Image (cartoon, rainbow, N blue to C red; front, top):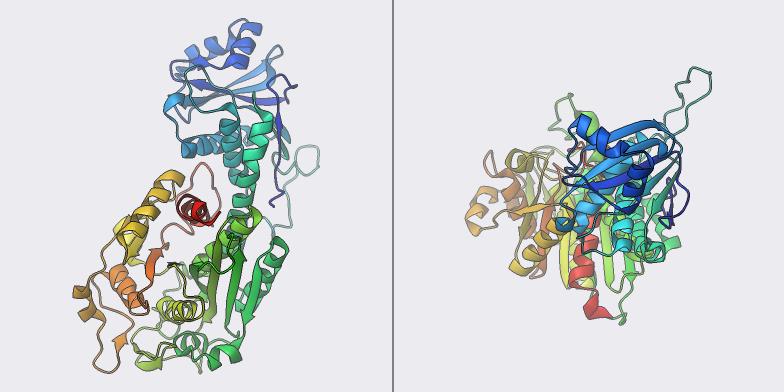
Length: 508
């Protein structure tokens, strides 16, 4: 479980920390404690709101300092129309409130998760959801920072908020709900940590070794080394890896939480290119450092399996990740090479920078051959074209099944990790047909994200399947109220919600 922020649920009446955040709805609708604090301070909150033009709109805040009868630092956070807020809204609000508190350089703080009359959500749910948002917002990756700036007294400053008291009328209910949130946060943090690591530290072998640690959460982990991959005839994946001195790995992670251990699993496949130079078709130097994150799909799958195991999800799930490094060298794959995939289909490699689809092709085929899954979802930072189409707001979704696509769209709306469906159609096949092999690995200038998905579709054997292109959302994405990290951990919350909403009830 993530232990970077200690969150404690306390009654409304519990003593407040020196820095306090209270909630305020639109038109200055204060919760019970905030009303009492305002009265104790002689109307100080209402006066400050009037002076600042504060109306309680969502994600706005004012601060009152030096009000001894209130708190040394009191931050009033706007909720907007609280009765209309969804679970995702409360999570985001918790992240925003934590951001306001942590900007004040305090080691402990109180968040009073109490809203005005008219809100229909139970107090414990609101408190747990806001705490989840605060926890996600608290993440930072400073593993390699050895120097810390000193304050005026010559001592290093405190490393942010260490303890957050969340005050609620239902602390016990909040605590129970928050246990599930903590499990999901553990998965998000794992995904972020993996993507944030530099590639000299985290290659395919090191990535695989880190995933062995999931056994402590109850995940069965199996690592397939290079000889096993050769025996399986994963020629497409091995072709990508052959230019690097760092050998490839495929990691199989299984969580068996369904009532019937024989229940066919849900399969999640992740692209794990630990560094992508583009190979012989080398990328431009500018921005190439970001290619340490070309394994974000694999990181998401690892985070998802940890989340499912940590909360004891009632489902059978398998996660498979193909881990390689794509490098230029005397042994590297050349443009024009033809490789034979595990499926037996041949691929003409016209561009060695279209490598992720080659890795996925073999891992997807292996997943279907071995596990016969009920459905298969792959995640990959696959194309720059998806960012041209959707920017950094949505991930691209492709699917051969309308219900699966609709379920993923719904999960995206519920969590805020949104997906937008794009077409799969045989009309695009002509763009990836090859005169020299069964197919080529690029389709030309147009519809790049679609032709990449169309390529993957040739390795689907009648399985219900979805492909999610996360190139725009998994790394260097828009900063949100619950993530200030370069690596977002995108997809863990989406897929955890999808599993819980669509598949767990049927397995109990």
